[in-house]
Image (cartoon, rainbow, N blue to C red; front, top):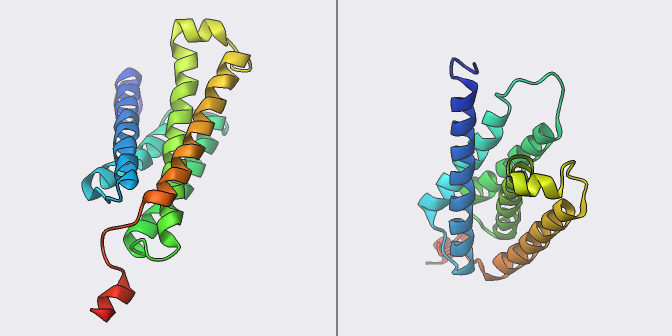
Length: 171
């Protein structure tokens, strides 16, 4: 039991929140490619990704695991992304800081998805039972390379569609 919920139910809730974060994160990324903020999708992405990391700490543990370290890193970059988006309103350098930190948070979620896939899917587990084998490493390198490319493209293409403070004063 975790917080009065069966472990299997808690795991299901955690996984569903994580998948919502991943899907909404990719929708928000597509918005960036089209210079659209997609406010609702972005809010769902940021909240569900934070909840994914937070609920990850709800599983019983007796020492800090690599998953916890990824969760801590994710929460740190999410904090910066939320500040860039909602406090600094994507003005100036906060636009690219937001894109990079938001995509880094999404990458962490996908990284963990790949880890979980290699742990839970029998065919993948057979290819990399200890996750130190080539198939696992190749999969993670592919994900990392894809995210680097997607993030660079998003930084170049995302220009928020709301005027910043300097433009508001000029009008």
